[in-house]
Image 1 (cartoon, rainbow, N blue to C red):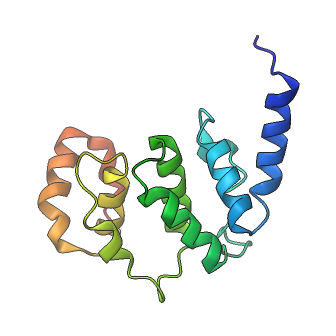
Image 2 (cartoon, rainbow, N blue to C red):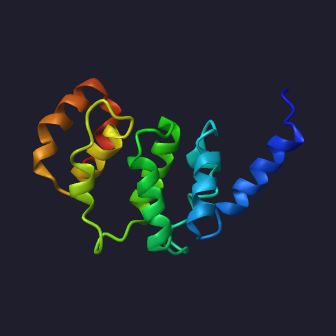
Length: 146
C-alpha cells in the first residue's frame, strides 16, 4: 500500500474542488491534476460537466480546454483529458468542431478520439481511416451509430 504525502492529498482535494468550478484557471488546474489519474474518466471531477443534469462549461472554460489540447507542448495525458472534456462541453452551434478535429494528425495522441468524433458527426471523409483503425483496433466499433 502506498501512502500519499499531505502535499499529494492537498493537490487531489484542490483538483476535485477546481473541477467543479466553472472558471478557466480552475478547469485547467483540474485537467492537469486529472491527467495523472490512472482512470481519469471514472475518478475525474470534470466528468460531471455536460451530464444529463449538469450544465455545460462556459465558453471561456471550453476555450481554455481547446487551448490545452491544441498545444503540442502539453503532456499527452493533459491533452487527452482536455480534448475529451472539451468535446463534451463545446457549444457546437458556435464552434466548427469538424474543422478543428479533422486536421488532427495520425501520430497525435488525440487522433483516435478525433476520428471517433468525426464518424459520429457524419464526416464521410474519415471512412478510409476509420476502416484502417477498425481493422487494427476492433474495439472502436462502438463509434458507428445505429
